[in-house]
Image (cartoon, helix red, strand yellow):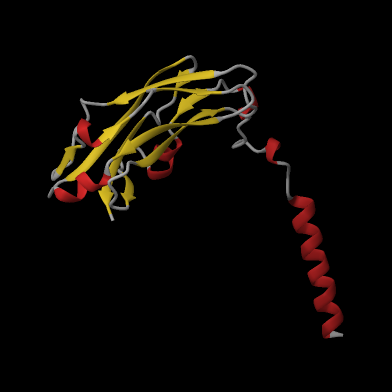
Length: 167
């Protein structure tokens, strides 16, 4: 009898749980992003948080190590036209105590303009870093990359301070 009562109570509880739940769209917290405009952003900054350093650790090498910085079109459905991003080093970046700007002689970028092709959401800025120079200095370096312009609206995630170290 006790087992039968337990089974009936379990079935009633599960039935009540499913019947009292509602669709997410009925919730006051539902946000429909399908109609939102596309935004240009640096997703690694979104991952680490605004103002936080993104750690990049490179093996010591005399050949340049490639650091890729993703640029993203944040939108519900990929765009039917290409999106252009212009990036640069932010020389106005305020450095935390003990950090310095990575010297221009330590890295190179062939093109600061990145294009996300139609139908895609992500493209990459390639930064070639001579990691062997980093290890010879007693300094901790930051390379603050900023999204300066785009043919779509720039999001709040538009500056990525890379903390570049040698392993």
